[in-house]
Length: 175
Image 1 (spheres, rainbow, N blue to C red):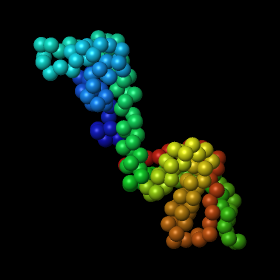
Image 2 (image 1 turned 180 degrees about the vertical axis):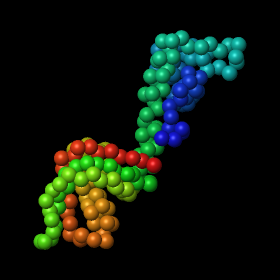
Image 3 (image 1 turned 30 degrees about the vertical axis):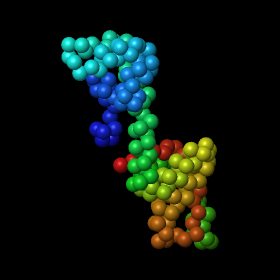
Image 4 (image 1 turned 45 degrees about the vertical axis):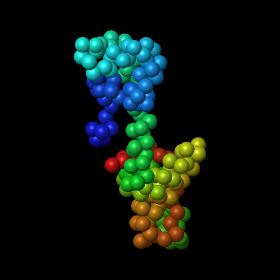
C-alpha cells in the first residue's frame, strides 16, 4: 500500500485528521472522544504557549477514533481503484467444466492467479452491496475466471462453462 493509505502515526497528525473528519468541528471531536470542546481546542491550537498535550488515556482514545474514521475512506478509494483498474485474483480451488463432447471435464484443484477487469470488481461489489450470498459471488468469479483464464478472453474453448468450488483460499490484490 502506498503512503497515502497509511493511518497517521503521530498524535499530532491524528489531531489534524480528526477535526477534518468531523467537518472542522472541535465540538464533534470532543463528543467522540468524551472530553470538552475546550480540551480539544487546546490540543489543536497553533499557539504553542496555549497548546496542551493529551494524556495517555486520551492518546489511546484519539488513536481509536482515528482508526474508526480512517477505514471507510480508504475502503472507498480502494473500491474505486478496483472498479477503475481491475484487480488480481489469487485462488486455490477445485475447478470443473461443462464442455462440448470430447473434452476433459474432471474437476481438479488448481492454483490460479489472474488479472480481472474493473467490470468484475463492480459486479462483485454490487452483489455484496445487495447482500448476495457467497454462492452468487462465487458464480461471478467462476464466470470471470472462465472467460479470462480458461477461454483466454474468448480466444479458445468456446462453450466452456466453469464450476468453481471447494475454495481453499481466495485473495484479491489491488494496484
